[in-house]
Length: 344
Image (cartoon, rainbow, N blue to C red):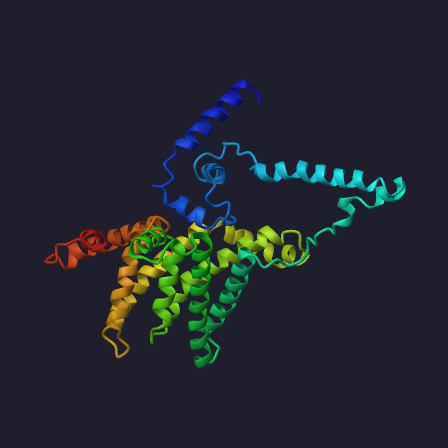
């Protein structure tokens, strides 16, 4: 790469650094789907690296993003470990011959870790729960399953997603620093706009309900499939079984997260109207309908879901406003005005 190419990349990096990611709803969705260890999620270099990757994917594909370097802590630990093992070898050389000393260094005595051993870290736990949720949700939707088993699978799907979301909240944000009103308020404000909190409330709304709307499983299934596909692509890309049966589906899911998010937002809004219609049936639940529309209001405002919900509401307005003006002109109130009044 010549000087012109370096200057071009420098300008592109400056543009990526100056880009307003907070106003782009795709960034919140992209960052919420990145699997980063909790101890690294708050580091500025890690966040900036993934911002550049986001900018390369959605804004400027010509931006060159270098691989993220490891922390300086691990690099500083290696010389100290080497010096300590060297000193241990020198001290043992007074009592052992040169042949045995060459065979009993500190490196040889330490058993190598098994790279294929299953580690139950956060990502593995999340994958296990979401894989279980995906299987149970499919069982709840499948039409040939008995009704009592289908209803039980319906509630188990929401319980599993609620547990997964709450565990993710605890892993990323921990617990409040103190159990007083001010600390609880600060903690709640930091988690109330996250995708995990929204879906935990979403699941708890339907777990405790007598309604069994299978339509509500669409966002849950989309969310769990995204987690499963991301984990499989990251950890099992070298498996023959994965490459033969799962790779194509996982690649499609991982590359169409925006499509799945749009589908989820449309299903969530449609579910709100179904709950309004349910108020005219014997299964009506006024409290649930009111709470769910409050949740839709939060989805409309939260950065992780705002872009998709605002786009869906705008599409509904473009469809219904001409019909309102034509057939019921006495209303004379476009749906956008009602939407602004409710979601403000």
